[in-house]
Length: 193
Image (tube, rainbow, N blue to C red):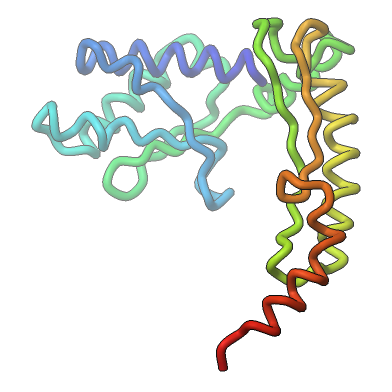
């Protein structure tokens, strides 16, 4: 699906550049809050309308036509609807949605890995608040965070030469959970009525 997104973003950037030179950098897709609004949404028409001195729906219609006539649009889009003041709601073809399966099969064990950029990656999880109530959810999140760091982030997403640091936190002080009952007792003794 990354190829689909890259192709459509390039087509959108070209359409934006045609409307307003220098605006190709505003090419972005958002995920609609309501699934019935499509697979991706574009708000660029509303952002460009004021500088162009035009109605956002007119700008949206021009973007819609440009996207639908582009090679990527013809290949990956089933429909584009203009909603509200100028939102573009994009609907992908079934082939586009199935593209992610092809990518997984093509890349096998490399699928989802980040490129090797020599940067550090820090995975933090759990921070039990020693001033609040301690409940079973804190323990569950600790186990879940530790499992996720090992399975997803540490094993799948990292290139071999990315320096990965793992840190389970209990408010930066491993002993704070042990001293919590004493702290709460002292806080209760000196509380003003």
